Amino acid sequence: MLRRISLIGLLLISCSTVSNPENTGGGYQGTGGIEQTGGSESGGEETGGQASGGLAGFSGASGALSSAGMLSSAGVTNAAGNIPSLAGSSQAGSSGNITNPDEGGRTFDVGTGGTLDVGSGGTLDVASGGTLDLGTGGTLDLGTGGTIDLGTGGTIDLGTGGTLDVPCIPTCVPDVLGSGEEAVNLLVFGNAEASGCDTEGRMWVGGNATLSGYGVGAQLAECDADTPVLVVGGDLAVSGGIKGRIWVGGEFISGTPQCGGIWSDLPPPVDFEYLVGTLAAYSERLAEYSTNGTTTVGVPTVFTGTDPDMNIFSISGADMLSSNGFSIDVPVTSTVIINVIGENAGFVNGSTTLPDGVTCGSGEVSLDDFCNQLIWNFPDALSVSVSGTAVQGSILAPYAALVSDGSGQVNGTVIVQSFEIGSCIEMHPHYFNGCLCTETGEYACCP
Image (tube, rainbow, N blue to C red; front, side, top):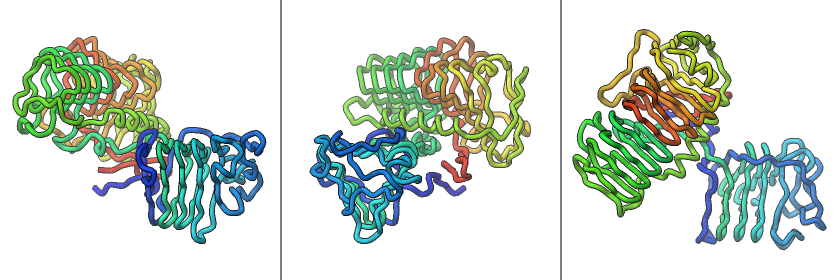
């Protein structure tokens, strides 16, 4: 299947702030009309005046910056060089766009410590050959849906300490967590504590990990001496079979890998800060998709959809906890997103029936069954429980603790804030690789 990227073929910068602290000439260069999208701050309706530290000339239909198209700290009475929000009808016309004619390019100089806020839905077009110079300590805030159009040969010069303030751009899960046997089965942003059972694929923990009688990597084809099977950013105490190399960022308390030894003095193989921001944004994106299937709460709860490509459902955490099992009735070809709303949710008792008699379970790494196309998304949850049941599909709960009151299993990728397992919960490597669509019909990712 061809990979399709949504975001309209744009230049993507993921995860909050990108900076260039040591390089006055560095930055990002784009050709061919590459755009930057994203943003989280609203623009507002500031007009300001020079005497009050703002910059006059943003109101009206033209939305011009100045006759020369140049902004610099020298041209603004505010010593910090702040430029008010460019979006909004009172600043840049009804579209909120700040555009330069494509004739030689223009330079936008934010100045020392200045801030350029494109605002909600605004566009900053530097035109062909134009330059956006953030100066020393300057900040560019794209706002919600803000866009930078660099034009042909346009550049962004971050200056010394300059930053681009943009939110995380969701990336395809297989892209950030790997695919095949290189993929991670369980990702924990914070601490992990478990006894008994195992994660049959790879396991990454951002904080401390205390794993008693717990195995990792059992379903990998061979013991991996080269790529870490268990990555722990903090301290590690483990007793159990680890089928490959271990990387530890903190104190290595105990544990014996089956091959490859222990790395502790090499750079971390996982950027947890990037993963936290990117996957949280990914969860938020999925939660915004409109439902096109029917949820009938009961015992069991039934999810019914007819779309051959994508079926999206929504259920409250309370209804989920009371369901005592699930039935998913959709075309077996489709990706399924089930958004679960609420701070507390989980899979408690009962079983899950999949379409066409499909079953998912323990075994070798699986890349091509229905469980690879099914994801349960918990954008609000602080706690997700698994008790007395087999979860079919992946769990994306970036703010939640995964807890258990009884034994069970998860057949999918698991992404959680913390892992607090007192009973035996097995993680089986059915990695999520479904196609995700935006509201406009463009794909967010397709493996």
